[in-house]
Image (cartoon, rainbow, N blue to C red; front, side, top):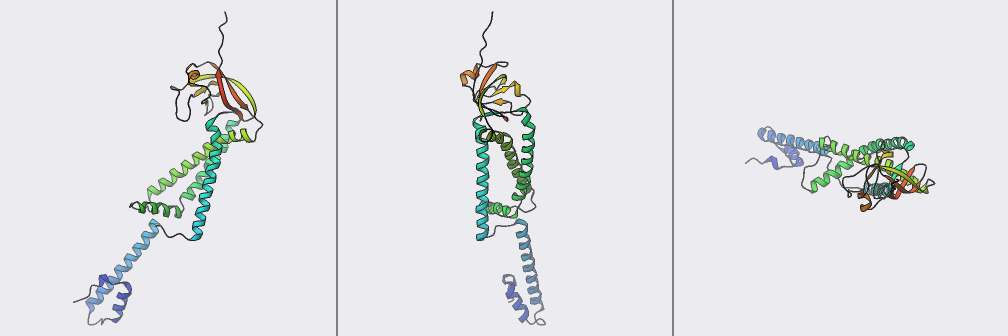
Length: 265
């Protein structure tokens, strides 16, 4: 009975090919050569798949150190962005007209740089290996290097990070400079109500009031400067006095109230 060469390893097949009587058993020689060819093709396919999918590999101590540093860097950047946005979130800031265009350019520059850096970072092979490790852990099929899903994920992820950075620069940087760098002094200003939101409660901006004097700007409103009762008593065209601090960059609003005009006979 002829042996089943399909169960042999490469070393066993090579040893059998060297020791077999080729003139006496030509059919077995053909079977061994066929089995060797199949093993070679299978190994080549496995290597191709490994390169195409970039499957996870054990991390060296050096890679682990780099990952820790990268995580520390990301946390630091997140804290900086959070520190810049926090004052803008809790207080409305009205940017001076002459500073709108410069900060737009700075913000778009930040968007471009962060987008390119994020594209390079997210497109690195190590990130694909991490993603495939998570997919395999969930019992899902890993992504190929050239898959459309991976390309879309890299683009959308980089764009989201870049837009967040741009928003932080345009909205948060003026407030941070106003609070910690500029010579801001207590002040007040009179503005005109352009319109009100349909309802008082709105996510991240209760009591939104649009300002006529800032209609040309992207952020032409203030939030949470009056109580709900006061807000419900406002109407378009009415004057308000905003209180806060003034610097060369703009006005940081902390409070406000409606100006009641008396009827003169």
